[in-house]
Image (spheres, rainbow, N blue to C red):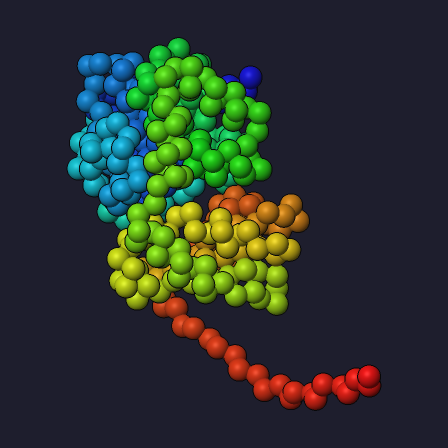
Length: 330
Ligand SMILES: [Mn+2]
C-alpha cells in the first residue's frame, strides 16, 4: 500500500466546497493526460452529484482517445468565474497547460486549486499538491486517491484510468511498471475497466497516416557520435502524410529500440517551434537533465523540450579511397 500524500485532506475539502470544478490537463495531451482528466472529473461528478464539472485542454482530444467515455465533453480553455475550483492533472509546470499567459489566475492563488501529478519537480503551485514522483502515471495516483477518499469507481471511470496507466508504462513494458502498477491495473479490471478495449484501440490499431508518419521517423534515424539514435520530422512530413501532430506519439519507442544506444531523440517541427522527445533505456543516462539544457524537463528515462526555431537537415559527405582487393594466390 502506498503512503498517504500530505495534502489529501485539503484537496478533498476544496472539491467538497466547490460549486463548479474545472479539470485541466496539458497541451498536446497523451493517454495519461486525457485518462486522468476524464477519470478525476467523472469521479468528482459521482462523488458530488450536485456539482458542475467541466473538462478543458487547449488542444483537442487525439483521435485514438475519442473512444473514452466523456471524451466529447473536453472543451478548450475555460472562462473562469471567481468561485471556481480547479483540478490540474499531469502537468509538471504551469506552462504545460499553455494557459499560464492567458489564464494567470489559475496559478496566482486567485482560485482553490488541486494539482495531481507524477512528474518530479517543485510541484507546489496549487492550494493542494498531490504529487508522487514514484508513480508511473497520474491515473495511478488518482486510483490510489479513490481508495483514500472512499470514492467508488465505475467501468467507465476505470477504463479512463487504465488508459493512462497503459500509455505511461508503454503497455506495462517500461521499467516504471512496478508491482503497484499491476495491483492498480488488477483493481481497475475488477471494477469493470475495459482493458481489452484500451489495448486494442491504443496498441492494435493505427491510422494509415500514423503509420506513414512513423515510416518517415524510422527511415530518418541516424546514430550520433554521442551514442544517440536521432530522428526528425518536419512540417512537410506532417503535410505529406496527412498525420496530425498527436500521431507522432509512440514513434519514439521504435527509435529507442536501436541496441547499444545511450539515448534516443525525435525532433519535430510545429508552429515555429522545434519539439524534442528524449528517451533512454539506461540507468546511467538522465534525459531529464539533457532536456533541461533546452529549458525542458520530465523524467530520468523520458523527457522533452520545445524551443523556437526550425529544423535544418545536415548531410555529411566523405570521400573514401577504395583500396584494391588484395590478391589472393591460389
Ligand atoms: Mn503522465
